[in-house]
Amino acid sequence: MHVLFVHQNFPAQFRYLAPRLVERHGWKCSFVTQQRERSLPGVEKILYQVKHGATAANHFCTRTFENAFGHAHAVYQALKAQPQLQPDLVVAHSGFGSSLYLPFLYDAPIINFFELFYQPMGQDLGYRPELPVEEEFLLRSKTRNAMMMLDLANCDRGWAPTAYQRNYFPPEYRSKINVIFDGIDTSIYQRRANPERRLSDKLVIPPGTRIVTYAARGFERMRGFDIFMKVAKRIYEAHPNVVFIVAGSDNVHYGPDLDFTAEPSFRKQVLKQDQYDLSKFIFTGWLEEAQLAAVLSLSDLHIYLTQPFIASWSMVNAMACGAVVLASDQVSVREYLRPGENGLLADFFDVDGLARQALEVLRDPAAARPLGDAAMRDAREKYSVEVALPRLAAFFEETARNRRAPSTLMKDLARPGTLKRRARPPAKTR
Image (cartoon, rainbow, N blue to C red; front, side, top):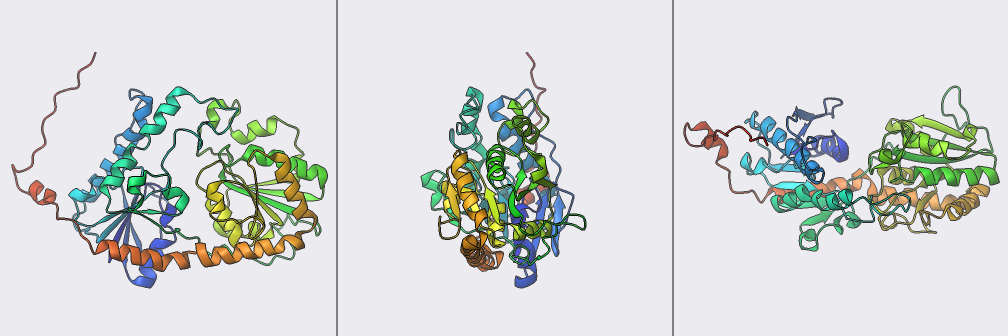
């Protein structure tokens, strides 16, 4: 079987899946993306280039849709130029519109990966009391879902990693969406023995020093970086023999943090707002997966914070590495963590409560060790790509059996005079 994956940010959610379908199932996998960097073993990469998108002339509320259309058209053009490519199934990330026009090229069924359906309030809007909710952003929360609604109508099946994510979509479409976790690589994310607690040749954590980890793609409000720093300060003031290993970058991926930040990054803004003993912190920057797994394996306690939003891969990675995870109590997090069984939960805004539970773990890490062991078992048994692979392969095969009615577009384009482009008059100006 030939599966065509589509995602603007290669390889994203399909990084572990596509190579294994090639290696273990003997399938052919192609990947359409705009990212030139990186490759996946055995996976053909086809590049597209976006030529259309939102401009300042577009209404603020429609710019997300304009950008998604640009991707949809670019994917269509790139694939139309390769008529020899005839997939049996298309698997595309929704929201970017990347698969919208592909029924005109293929009779292959389409599975859309549905990650998030935006809500007017409570995700990135209206959750933080210190951030005003601007009318423009409130209105845009509705139109941001426009391309996803088109994808819901256009696709044959949907796929969401968690029930939490599926349940945000309109009820009339939920039966179309299968819940299958996309899978982490537990051959990478597993607990490693490092008795020397060595981060590098020059950096070894002394015996007896407690290690608290925090990992995020970007240091931002959505992932509670400011809350983490407040909690960390309370921890080291009460328990001085501690070091915080903080992995991630200064990028902001979600929300309008930088619109309300005088400093060049949210991290610098947070550090400026209080007096922190930075000798307690090791900011590693972005880490390769093996490096991150090594850091998470050292952890006596991993703090994971998020607003009501999709739970990060980093939390599941920490679970797989046997870290004792203390997380913010959100519905998305409760799908993974059971407080007192495989982790700990506290209110996102309860700095004192988070610090109190953290200190209990750090005073006696051995007593909390069963939580990390249970989390590690759950990660292997429920969230590993080895568990996800057979389920996804069966889902793909079932969907691929129901082909669409063949499109005549390419044949029509090949016959002169059958399908013409209408000449458009110049745009009027006011």
